[in-house]
Amino acid sequence: MRIPKLIIVVPCYNEEEVIESTKVQLLQLLADMEATQLINKDSCILFVNDGSKDKTWELISLFHKEEPKVCGVNLAKNSGHQNALVAGLTVAKEISDITISIDADLQDDIKVIPEMVTKFSKNNCDIVYGVRKERKTDTWFKRNTALAFYTVMKRLGVKSVYNHADYRLMSKRAVEKLCNFRERNLFLRGLVPLIGYKTDCVYYNRSERLAGESKYPLSKMLNFAIDGITSFSVKPVRMVFGMGVVFLLIALVIFVYVLHSLIVKNNVQGWASLMLSLWFIGGCILIGLGIVGEYIGKIYIEVKDRPLFNIQETLLNNEE
Ligand code: UDP
Ligand code: MG
Image (cartoon, rainbow, N blue to C red; front, side, top):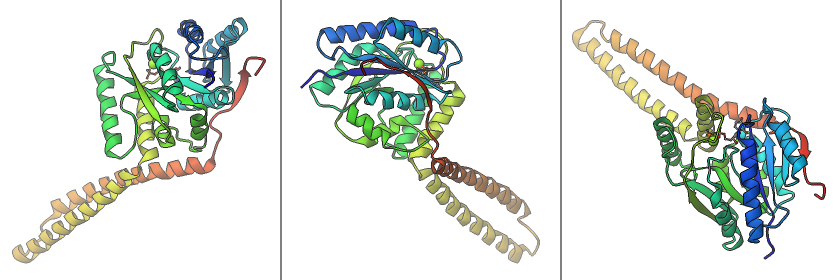
């Protein structure tokens, strides 16, 4: 089998503080892997600038001038991590045999990349997931919300790899298949397992962010989790339906009780229980409507079929 060409895809949003160190470490890794003939000498890094407001793109352009192994894609505006990743993969799949996606802060251990490539070359795996051994470096809150999220996803029947973020190797054909998913609400961790092909995992310890702040504040994390759940499962709607049936039964019982007290005690009773149930059911209907609305909102966005990203510029090696 010929030696594969690897492109490491790195989405970057306001990463001026870490990007230089990331570039140095990844270039060193590429050099080491080329020396052992794990990857071919045309392998490179593809930074995707996701509409950063700082000097990230200026730095990428500078690195590209100094070192042709550093390539870049500049998105016209901030499109979000998942869209930036797909933008990078879409460009990379045309000119590579394998891609590896990794966050710009290199919290995910790059030492397992050779192992990922070996699993592709020797074991014919099309997808190799980077999986965290533990979450020691995370705060109590992040660790437990993540755990709750994976548990809910599993209960709802969504296939996803536990403790795997978007650090993974994908073969050219796997990326091509991923690009066939035309949905707008992207949750790659749920989509990639739907591709099929042979997969494997490599395990690593995740370290702290080198510098700068997390680009995933709580609000973005929550949106991402809601996207993940509602894009892949209609069980919440069914649960609302089930709840509706239960509440109708309760209403029936209350109705019987009110009738009974009217007949037996001959006075108007049950006012409190009626009022209570009115409010209670009203609340439930609103919650149900909210959930149904979430799905209708998704249909609306899908039907509009907007482009996921707009590439403003592309920096690639001349010979490609
Ligand atoms: N990112 C992006 N666009 C965004 C937000 C984040 O491309 O709108 C990138 C960011 O530059 C980083 C990766 O997504 O490479 C993950 O972000 P971060 O490391 O801040 O997330 P955390 O590790 O805290 O979950
Ligand atoms: Mg990070």
